[in-house]
Length: 254
Length: 70
Image (cartoon, rainbow over all chains, first blue to last red; front, side):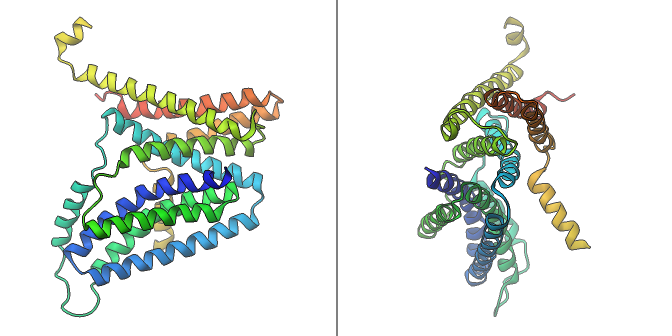
């Protein structure tokens, strides 16, 4: 159970972030130079592994579990609420959905405006854009891997979940050679947001001294309750937007 | 100094971004729940209060985002 608690959210969040990173990497590689792009990707992956290794291990070894759960739970609540609210707004139609195909096209246009690729040696623009893109998207993965892994005492499974997601997304992306626009990114973000808020509430609650009735089983209750409330929220926002868009006479009849 | 500022700006954007209520709200909710725990209120009730407070923070943020602007 604890293994899954750490691995599943890390896997799902990583799929989302790696799909976004893949879009950037493909755009840079296709438009400019693959060698420098892949060196940039490699550099970012090494940097992320060092960050997870150092911070993950330090946190697990040095910080008492109650303090860890309070701090991690608070961060997960803050971070998860952000993901969940954005996902709800997208589901309700109040915010544009994340569209990898259009992001890819925008990135291609932006990169073609850069100075040309040097005839020899390293293309530092390819390197920098790929490195920055993978590092920034990967930092969100690292954050979730370290927080979930450390709090559940399962840093290994959390890292493994993220690594499997990385291999899967990069493998499919490499074979298709185009952005993964069909991955249900918005749905995944909704699910991850719900999980982050659920575990954040649970762990932060334990951190301040709440002994949850039913222990770990209360996680399912919290998850179900947040899911129901969020669906009601999506329905309410959608209804409100439709009422606002309706022409004046139709509004008067309601 | 420039790097320190950039580092701070990165973390501010990462955690607070354009929705400060989602940063402050959960901290206030946890503080209220902590006061109830210290006051000896039953764990189940405090848990329920914490859940409701978090949901309220989310609802408030969604209201701020979707409210009609003049």
